[in-house]
Image 1: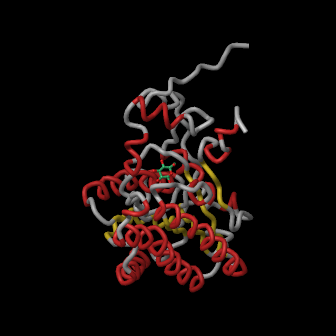
Image 2: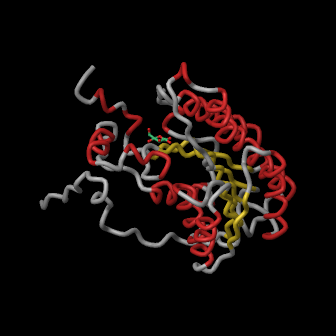
Length: 289
Ligand code: BGC
């Protein structure tokens, strides 16, 4: 048996050289709104949903150019796309964004509540602003966007030729909904909150054929965690936490998200899918304990 090649764990040379086939058109005719969609995981998910046939509302809060670039890339695949500038932690802005997207696209079938940030600090020096900003954007932002999406799902109901569900939400969580994270108490708290918010919403809304799930990414190569992978030393340190031996790429999240909001995943309700290369397997215990 030939040995499978080992991909060198360096910041630049560890992408899988074998490209994935294009996504099947599982979302044709549906409308998706993706928050934080002008960079990182959000941008990759927005592109994947477009590839899968959905029209895409691209939310962002700053970076007009990168939002326009994501919109152009999605539109090039033949679906509609438009950018919506709104702070997800501001109730009025979220409501205005949903009203505008529904006016432009006719409805919203899918919400990817993805926008999130970190404001890291040792616990005793964590300021009120650092605490509040993270909770406001990561947790309250997902509440506000989910609430507006659900209102639209309930208003419209199931349209069988579009989807088996009245609507689908993915709440973007993190491995830190279960892995405690010193120096990041605000962030881990927000993700722990997302976990229980998602499950409670899913339980309440499933009878209306609304499917709510979460994705919990591990270490993914995005701007939020650059210092965890952008030098060989940092990358090697990170790999002690990742049994699978490579960092995640935004596409690793995007492919699963496109499937999870499709009818191929119609019976998945209230679940969190961890996409983390095994980070939640407690790798420190592989040779210890
Ligand atoms: C954080 C990253 C971190 C990863 C794994 C994510 O939720 O945003 O900064 O690298 O979890 O620890």
